Image 1: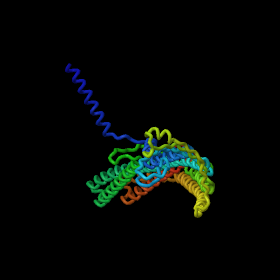
Image 2: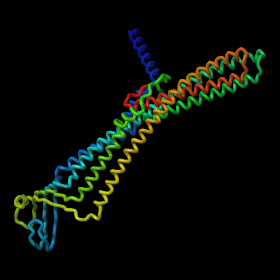
Image 3: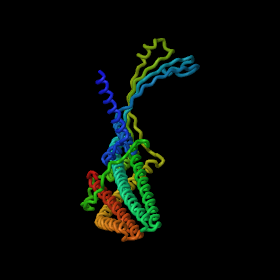
Length: 441
């Protein structure tokens, strides 16, 4: 029995340790994880979905406008003195208690096609809000991708800065030994110590930039400030990307992106608004019907007998012909025409902005790819020159000034390489997005 209890305690301890380790190790988010979570939780996306739900409700309600409206009414009145009995319409001079009740219905038979146009318009608004939701998701996707790639850039910068610090420490150790042996001056050691401090400042700056970028990502994902968050380490490859044809990318984007579709749809919505404005010039024909009855104390009959005998039905048509609306209808038609032209200009502007975005991404991708080969060559050559300088410095064949110059040249080349690699990856993925392809790094 003691052995069983001991085994149970050991297992429990293992589970507790495993749970603690799991808490200590935060989940590492891949780009796909970040995009999926952001699209589900981003506030802008949620607001767009709510607006879409409202548009759907308005669309359903507009279809119900074809149905009749039905209402019930009841009233209890008391009149004293000379008055007209509201039930019998007789002239009486006494205290009159009267009760009336009824059910009335009304339906619009014709309103210049106003109801049908409203239904069509609200149906288009539902589609337009669907495009708005897709646009919000796309904007979130692009923002997360850009922030994630920027975080990777800073993360690689941390690794480079740490390697430089390790190299500087080794150089400082070698120079300290030479100082003890009397082969170098103390000034050289002091200069290396200063350089090491500068390298540590560079590392701290890189770490701070990385943490700030993680905050940006957490905000896009709508995570709580106290939530642990770390991205998955993914090396940005400096591969040769196949840059797509600019015209092909633009043609696909204009035919498929939601912001272009919603802008084009806006013109159709405004055209229906014009039709609705014109219908205000036309007459409105309505059908009305009702069931009514009442009771009065001036009659010598019971309440229920009077309600039965006073029961009557009504049915009728009403025609409303607009004659003069103080030029309101004319103004509405003129405004609707202006909004149609404005929507066409907005659609043209949207296409223009899209082309600018695509062409900028394409030009930057081509430029970054052209720069990549040179950046790699510069990085490799400067790294080789720096490594050789370190060895020469250790042998006393190179002074400290030349060593530091080669070191700074290498750092600048490494920075240029990382920046070019980030730009190429970012703008290539943008072009993939505009072609409808999945973003992957």
